[in-house]
Image 1 (cartoon, rainbow, N blue to C red):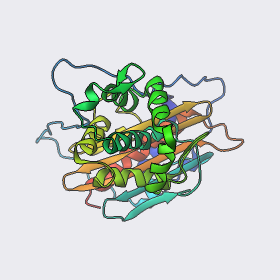
Image 2: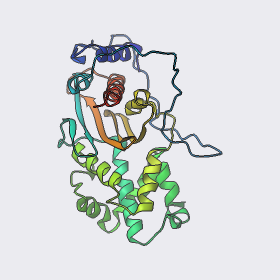
Image 3: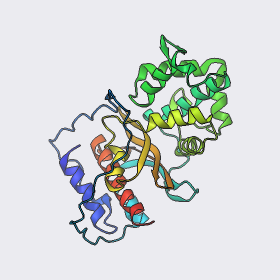
Length: 308
């Protein structure tokens, strides 16, 4: 991410209704850096860390008074020249922000969440338990390992194996339809904010899967990986006592930066889906889009911490 883009996007958070639309186009002659690979797994010899951020506050530091943020301020962090697809809603069904809710777009690796849900539902229907899938699988690997590789490490070979398994007897399509995810397709990969948001609701509520599979998949989404502080993951910088269970999606051809997840803060939860791709004729880069998603996440964290 270029330093200029990041500073400009953060500046817009401090100016009421400033409009990131005024942000300058990328500076000629500066080449964008290649984004960090979407996910890199870091093994641990003890316990599996989760996406919590709990710094110890310094009681001697007095925070300066800051102006209240509004929903308009939050939306203004998203720059022009980008086709945005997003929705933010609380677990009680209150929609805070939404744009292009039913428009189809390439979801990148976010599609792996409904894919994992379908695979686990098929295994549940076959009577397989969580213990069973430690030794039962396809392509020479057990299902537990394949699912972790797909959700935590975003491994494409694991994704291909699981998708091929789920397609048998048209089960993938049938189960997605049963859940109402009719806009999620694989030839080509397409989805909508509506479908992705529905998958988060189903997963968080426990309606789609058995209790053990529900906990297993949420555990994978909450497992730590190297790039958890990018994209929507920056929300934990301004919401230090919360947990974020998410799945990022990034592509360079076509250019897409996206993230979706469940933010849990005490007894409250929010569902977030955000994706951006350069608009036709735009010179916006992956770095531009990533920087503004991160600015949006920081701003939303501040918004909910102020009692909204």
